[in-house]
Length: 68
Image (cartoon, rainbow, N blue to C red):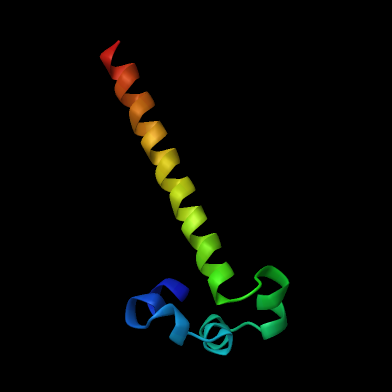
């Protein structure tokens, strides 16, 4: 949901309330997990980077194993 918002708006134009409405969660739930919208963006970026690194590692390992 957040990624969809970022595709249509600048991050500074996205509110916690808007995120919570789209995700159907309470603001207290949001703040129990994130400091603010920027913290959410950082956590999502970190997760994507970790997933890409894992995929790269898997592809590299698979490629090396195929070469043997």
